[in-house]
Image 1: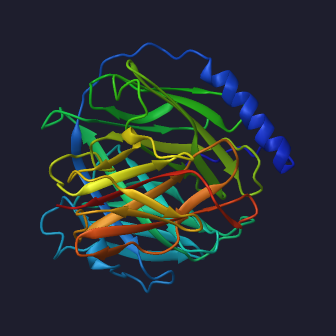
Image 2: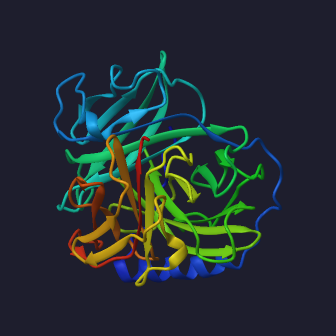
Length: 370
């Protein structure tokens, strides 16, 4: 597993200014032209919610918030082992194989965040290692959601779009997928910048349409990654990713990114028939607000926000959240999501660099298994 290099110490304001400067340079930088590759719907996927931050060995988390595409997931549950303070291995059964990406989102009001340490096959299953930290960078036992998915082939049915990237700290693409068959690419802002530009050709439109999720991947120390900027075009989507260490300094680490347009956060569309997403950037751009059953999702409050998705609430299900903007703030879920008469409420909460709750901007996504 890669060990990232820690950037020099910065005061928070200097860190934000550096990120803004590098971000501006990267938005104007060019990326390689798109190539061709295999395209896809998910071949293998699974999700879970760890509802006990100190699980006993072989713990089976909330069965209404876990599922996957292996045979009989109801009788072959996800299991979780804790390997240290704030450190966990999530065992997805019967979906072993290479490639793919993973996302994690912390659940709680304390400012803890969760990231991916790595993933890989373990016998017939797929293990995803998750690490969680509290503000300041000490490991901390934390509730979280986790998602693993990998794709290849051609989308069926057509419509919408989906892509993902797993990048190392210098912008080398370790694995990627694009449902148009094109090849995604990444450029890097340079040593210590903590900034990358991801290019997903052929996906989306010239408007702000779709959902983006980003997660840090680091086995050595606490790291947080987010969407710093987004530039849509008819030729594809440009997403600027910013990462920070626990001291809020720009930090070069690995990361995963997924983009979905009228598709669930793990890639498929119809089924599942019940999923949705919402982007809040100070307003609610129409293309960033999607509900697979038709009605618009709504937003209320601020710390935490309540995102309401009508008609989609069916167990088993999961949710993810990602912060938006150039600073070192981050977002998660304040509480497990609530289902009531088919309506789902997601409680998205954001934190500043010191770990205090603040009104923030974010992407959030929900999907059921059906």
